[in-house]
Image 1 (cartoon, rainbow, N blue to C red):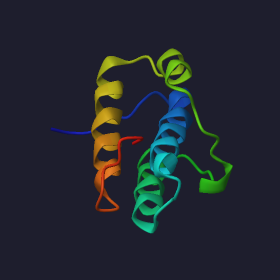
Image 2: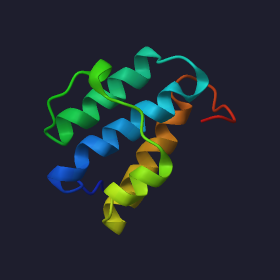
Image 3: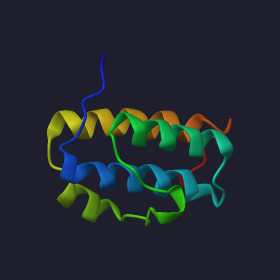
Length: 91
């Protein structure tokens, strides 16, 4: 299994989704921030975590179109939900 990078114009939306999921429990944990930073570096996106706006699922679906990249993002999101030691219902 390997990660598929989304097209450049969709990468920011992947990061927005990661931050949205990370904040679902009301707190952005250090490990979550680190994973988002690693993803940003991997995708070659220069952005501050604080600058990432939340994204709604329907907007993400509209903006993030490639199937393989979507599947890769879902894997990242699932991993992100467990980093703080607890996967909450909101996540």
